[in-house]
Length: 57
Image (cartoon, rainbow, N blue to C red; front, side, top):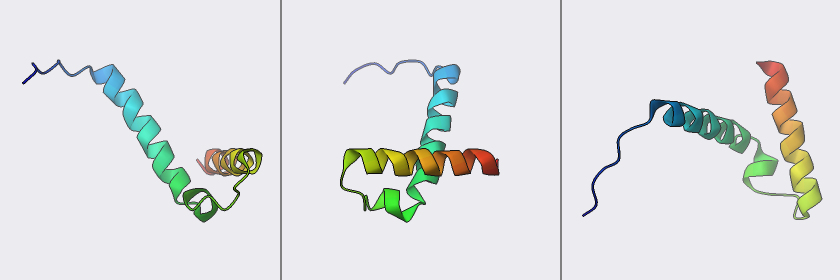
């Protein structure tokens, strides 16, 4: 069994922000189910959803 590393609060805080962002993006059905099979359309959906989330906050 390996020794536990100490908790770095700054790293945990940044990770939490990323995880919350991914969770909000997954609420968009087209992103969660990946309707757009082409990578460019999937990235466009992520960009659109991210922009709308950013404008909402």
